[in-house]
Image (cartoon, rainbow, N blue to C red; front, side, top):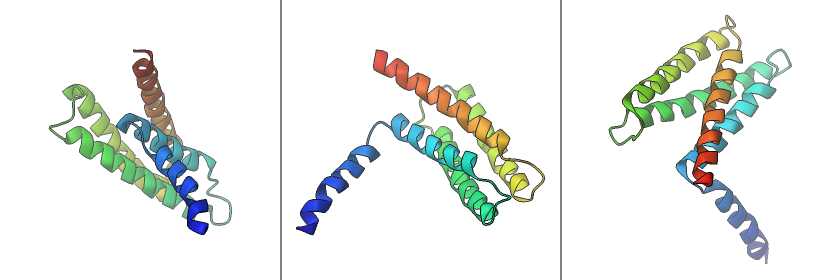
Length: 128
């Protein structure tokens, strides 16, 4: 009986996790950016939450960088290079955020710009 009750929930989770690569990329960027935006590092435990979210963001950007560096990537070479350079900036800036010499704002702004681009791409795909 318990398995029968859990099956629909599992199916909904699987359905939410599927989609095009761009749909998944949009969801991941949106999720990690929301986490970064909601953390107050001055609250008790805030720095730990910030460090965890920053780590998740760096993992995301490392994946993006590997994708744009791949020979199979279909984006124009110049755009791929720009995205890769953004990833390098994110990695370096993360260290500055974690040592307290910078804020997370620039990273959030970059992620939001990527989200806007992914949403526009999605809108164009759906209109076609």
